[in-house]
Length: 138
Image (cartoon, rainbow, N blue to C red):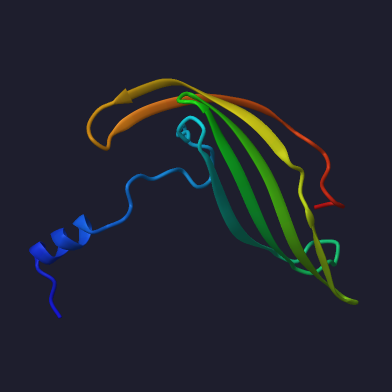
């Protein structure tokens, strides 16, 4: 099947993506006042064998963020990470599961400029705390 330019235009018009947000850092976007949204991200890491004779490490980290829009330019964000880790060693594998350190942040958007229907410049400042409540060395 061959897709013509009209076919491509129709497919892009039916796309459900409306906006994009940075995945590796906080973005300057906020939920509307009184709205809470949940964002989850799961990452897999693999660390090579260590020099001290230890084996490889496989780690799966699941971050969950709850963000509440207090005002159109102010949001409160909570993060709660969960971590699974498997360490390979000479005596077998060692599996660990635990919670990471939770955090809470206030995010204030001090600049917004709409350049077009989908083009917007935004800048925010954030500050918060991370509580050392996680389990173990995770």
